[in-house]
Length: 128
Image (cartoon, rainbow, N blue to C red; front, side, top):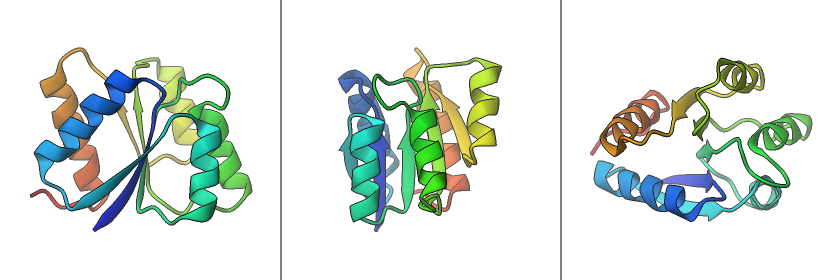
């Protein structure tokens, strides 16, 4: 069973991501953190197989969390950024911080599910 940490501050995005993951029928347990600070503490205390990370959050954003993980040598897990930002600069910054994939949140739920599933499969989560 994959232990996945989802870090997102918007309840609707958490709900949609959770729904998409359930529809994929991956063997996983989803744990949710509402910001980067909470996620950092969870990662220090528990092992996760995959991190799904929003980058635009108040207080500790995804970029800062990635930098903290790298500084503490906790960056060993695959990271998929799941962001509403389509800016090339955000994608490039995330890649420079070592993310494994970048999925843009979309108004089109079907497109979002397709992109998220492809990113998960690339990270070794077998499709159900």
